[in-house]
Amino acid sequence: MSRPSEDGSSYTAHLKDLDVAKPTFAIPDIDSFCLVDQLGLTITGQHLEERRAVLECRVLQHDPWCRNCGAEGVSIGTVVRRMAHVPLGWRPTTLLVRVRRYRCADCARVWRQDTSCAAAPRAKLSRHAVLWALKSLVIDRMSITRIAAGLGAAWHTVNAAVLAAGAKLLINDPARFQGVEILGVDEHCWRHTGAGTHFVTVIIDLTPVRNGTRPARLLDMIPGRSKQVFKTWLDAQTTDFRDRIAVVAMDGFTGFKTATAEELPQATAVMDPFHVVALAGDALDRCRQRVQQDTLGHRGRSGDPLYGTRRTLRTGADLLTEKQHQRLQKVFTVDEHVEVEATWRIYQKIVTAYRNPSKSEGKKQLQAVIDSLRRAVPRRLHELISLGRTFNRRAADILAYFDRTGTSNGPTEAICESGSGWSGTGRSGWMSVVSNRV
Figure 1 (cartoon, helix red, strand yellow):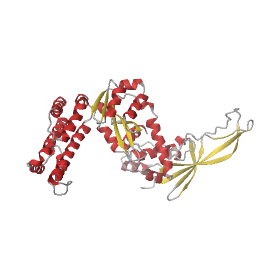
Figure 2 (cartoon, rainbow, N blue to C red):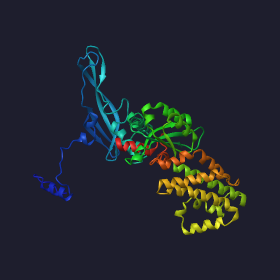
Figure 3 (cartoon, rainbow, N blue to C red):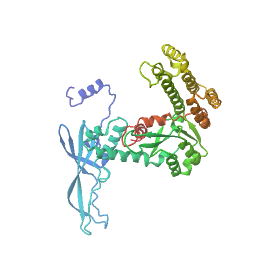
Figure 4 (cartoon, rainbow, N blue to C red):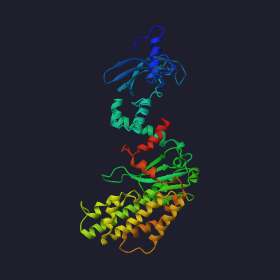
């Protein structure tokens, strides 16, 4: 760029080249650029290195008055408070804040300037650094290790600060319960190894999904998975909150169903399609494995006809290719595989019912499947008999889906399965909160 002339003509020409129409600029201000003015600080010096930047600051508000007697204090020097700040230029940035100390000549009380605007008491991260870390974790999907490296701080320091900020934005915010009419509840295992239970009960607000306004919101995560866990959580909420709940979407766990019936008698329990189809798919898998063992005497191996169709069997019939159709027909022509074919046809009828664009027709189709499983099912079809008992017991909950738009527990599953493994909090749930509030 050419050096601007005194009248700024070269600079204006350069702006036109950048296609900036009538720009408005303020006088350069390093405090606002580095975001320290919002922390009640001003920069008095800097020390820049290749891998680190240190900004020397002082507190703008003097506050020399004694809080005991109101007399004016006498300055007795300064102390230094260090805190990590938002990285500038991809370098970890440290704020070196010189805090003035005062002593009251009358009552001998000693105090310091208030720096709570810049950081929480005894915190090692500035308030902007905490929010930067939270957004980096939730929205940019950075790891705590990478965030800590960007801030030049310890892993545990960053993790604890982000947890506290997330809890303040979500868990400790009473406004998050306002307007909730549809709940989603599910369990999730955060670790699948080690001793003890690692399950948590995840509670989601599905109201925005029904209204089409925004994604589902994470309301809470409670350690444990039982009827009592969900019942205790519901009992801890206000009467207005419980009375406002009209629908609770859940999986097949009867504990959630019982807790809902006891604490939310007016609410409709809905067993979502994801888990209904999953139950039927599991029955199909068990049937295939049993027939495989009975006919060949071993578990599925490469080259076994049934084992080779394990994924094709779980694919919707309307999505099968011609080659997959032929493969299935070849398997079903074997007399020993008739039980697998019967179970497969029930599975496909359930999938078809949920895919029907007409809710009323889909409900009739699924009702017909449930009725067929109530009647005499051949004893050899053990898996269908067990599936029929479950469907018969939860028929009202299964069919309620077709009468309640936007009550699928799919968003709950999405939030659970997208958990980052970070301190037991689902990443999508935090994202929906942080992106709206930070």
